[in-house]
Length: 342
Image 1: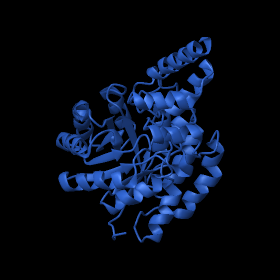
Image 2: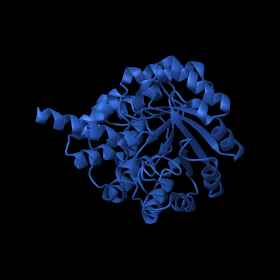
Image 3: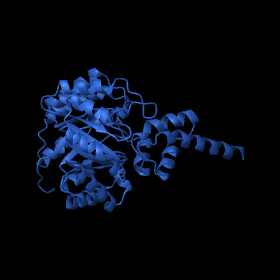
Image 4: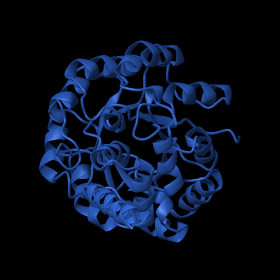
């Protein structure tokens, strides 16, 4: 790998990991995790509902604890790390963004579907006005051709984003696809480039390393792989790999190992591994947070959750369309019943 400048890591377990535990984080858990991440000198710690600010709802999943209590808790123990939030325009509003800034958040990541960057203009502008480091987060990046991705990234740059991310929300991108996307952004966009991977096809680490080789300097990881689907690029492993490659992160490896083993592992409801459902997420190109929703719908209608996920992939359903999961499950159940009746 070509020698790189410093890589800046964002730990997403306290946001993306919320999906994996059905948004049941407690203040005590966030305090412990955030303090250890701060002590390990992780540059950024993202804290929010899995679907971003104001995501707690019947459609996306109700949080056990108000997210602003979790954000405030994380800020209270961070004197080295900066706390970040995710906001999806249409779910979160400017009101929540201002409230997060008032609590001491230092970074806002404004997320849209890869073809809908135009809806981020006001939120990116407000984030900059609030003095926050601002990231444009292009979700489901595998669903758009490279030219469209570049176009949308340039829009976010024009709105004021300091960084633009290629976001592999489904864990569906293959290494050569990551390579061409990061390379294209590096050639056409003047701001920092980031990469957020999911491990549904066991490619999160490989894809992350390819992204770094092509010039991405802002990288996401989740400690103990705690994230939606099969999780994200595993932070403590990534720190070790980058150290072996001579790439600077500034993160204390031993402290990350201890956090993963002693604090995060007990939080996991089930081990983060590539199950048949998470594999189908990557195979079908489906938003990683749909896994638990599909499993619940499958149980309700007594059908195979993989059938739901495959159909969602065929319909190119994107984040924000969780209500369609039950509709698809009901339709599959009805077709199965009709088939048996024949």
